[in-house]
Image (tube, rainbow, N blue to C red; front, side):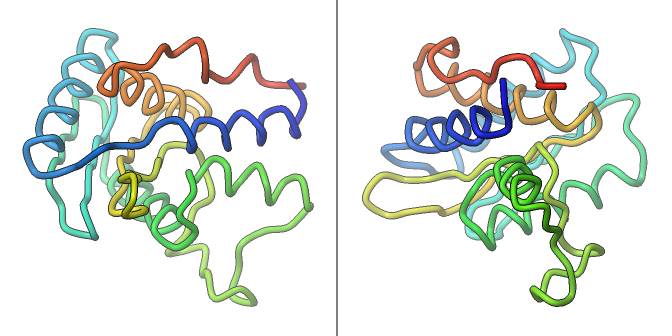
Length: 167
């Protein structure tokens, strides 16, 4: 896949992976599924689900460290600011050969355009939250979130998943 292919697929994911509603019970159910799947796969993830900035689910699995919550915070800041997945923002910046920085009001200590944070978009309302993971390589972080959202929303993952990373 090319960078343009990636961006087109990321946009498709954000269009398709939308909720009819999202509340505390949904966050708990989604987060619990994600935690169980990460444990089954042996993935050392931090999982964080926020609704309008309010933490609703958090888990730090074996193998994570003190840096992972910071990565989660920085990735979710990107999603909340741009209402896009953090991976999409990073891919779009790469396409423009640009970076987030102080000139954009996005200090790298607070914003990380790396894969792993995905917007919780409620139909008819807009982006109300973010589901974020951290600790495996960024494309894998992103893919794990998308796969779990597909399962939760009852959508076929094959219809939206990213292909192999381009060289």
